[in-house]
Image 1 (cartoon, one colour):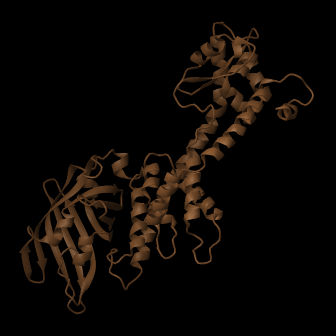
Image 2 (image 1 turned 180 degrees about the horizontal axis):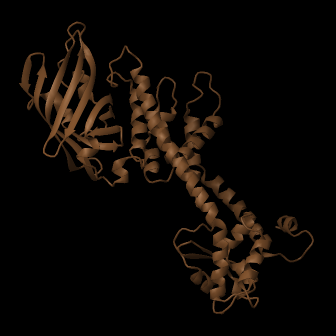
Image 3 (image 1 turned 120 degrees about the horizontal axis):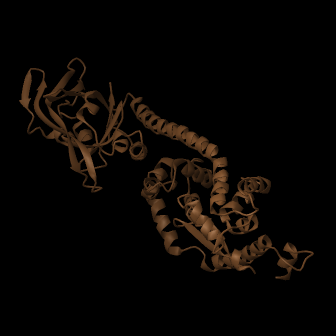
Amino acid sequence: MNELWNDLVPSDTSIDQDSFLQLYRTIDNLFEDEEEEELGSSPVKSSSLEQSFAQLCDDASVPSISRSALIAWDEIQDLFQENLLSEQEFDRLWSQSLKSQTLNPIMRQDQLTLEGFLYFNDLLDDLFILEENEIVDDGIQSVSQETTSSETKDILFFKQDSSPQELFARIAADQKTVSLDIILKRWGNLQEMIRDGDLSKDEVLELYQRATKTGYLDCEAFVVFYNSIESLFEDEEEEDENNEDVEEQSRRISSKAILLNLISDVASDASRLPCGLECTEEEIQQIAGVVKYLERESSNMLVSRRGSIKESDIAGTWKMIYTSSSALKFNKGISGLVPPTGKFGGLIQKLKASKFMLDLEYVETVNAGAGSFEVRVTGDWEIKSSMSLFTGEQAMALKVEPNLVLYGITTQKADHWKSLGPMNLLDISYLDDDLRIMRGSTSSESIFIFKKL
């Protein structure tokens, strides 16, 4: 105790408020360190994380996690959904965790080992530790301080939705006026602005002198003083908001561009079937992770319009560029008519909307050398409000009723054509001017992505 006192007050027998607070925190930190040593890490949590790590591993032979696998983890997606974590913050934690790892010659340097995964979760936990005296509710919060003056026993913090009149009443207590000294001692937000360098004491004094006529501030003069401080930061806040708008736009473009690039990489392999029908499991997980993130973006009409879309919003000619549907993979297309010597060549979906009719046409290409042909499916369609079986929330679905299947000189009724079933009712999860993403109404893992032509 003597050593701490001498460090803070080397040549005086008294201590000011700032030194007292510093001494208090120093002593408090000594006991926090001891508590952390006694508690240690929770074996239950560690075991749970090890299980999660095993489930997220890309390759069991070299246990490690890729960025795409980690960002698709339910825990991370829940934080994204609740706006508790941004992708930028995720990338920062990912980068720090990579650097924290012991080098392993048999492991890719862009993946996390168990050591890095545990370190990542420690960093994640640190994001949600409340700091001392942090405001956790609306209005004004008092932080008690031991001082000799009853007038200055509380430091007041308040949020912007509280009025300056209310703040004045709390600072002035039972008095009709307050001095600058009392304001500086009791207004915690103002103390932080000065301590952080956002305001200098000279600037505060100048604003105070402009507001006072008697050397003290009554409630009306305090409001003037308060507003003059607020006005200093209005331009900065507007600039920050503009920067955030640019960052948000860039992030949206980036998410969509990442998705289209992933699909383009898959399509570049001519030896595989188009539309992702022969994707690897890792590619499926990567695309699903980006889709889940993109669905929450404000560029999604379902988000910006609160789920309200019309037939005219999706009418047009669309090309299927990706699907993870196991049924389409099994049938090698939507018709199931691909011969053993042929292969699926692509799918076009035409949605026509007029005042009285909503007509549908699928055009499926079947590549079979000289015997290549097209399968055409005609029918009706509509946008239908439904209830998601997985979220319990209202969803918008594309309902299709196929009437005829035409190929070569053959025409058949489509009402019992089983291979068409998986696409007859799909929830629309993302929509913008040229991209539409749909999920299976009974299997949300079945993703269908269409690009407008």
